[in-house]
Length: 148
Image (cartoon, rainbow, N blue to C red; front, side, top):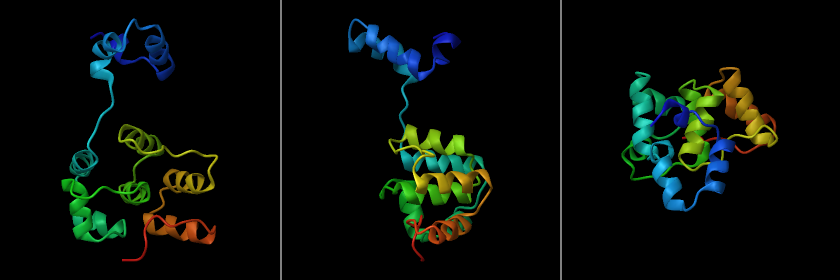
């Protein structure tokens, strides 16, 4: 597959889908460009690539260590809020967070929703998960995680 095919934006891909003679034809052409991922496996890979100690990450994200390991091995499925707490603790960028969320079937952060705008602010300003929870609390918004 050419680099040109890999670099098409979503609008261009939607146009290709609209013009495709069949879904099979589109899917065959798209195969390498479909987003698909397993949350636990991909989260583990992210943690490993950033050389973060899992126990320290779970503590920083304010989640029980057992639950954290269950997320990573796929026996539990995280809420969007738990993922956001983990991402804040990993100091991920807004763009990285939204890519992970979209790739794994979660609603991406959207600046027009107050909760999301607060989390985006926290990501952009390097807040920890704890500091972000404090901001959310001050704004009367739901917290990322409850106290352990």
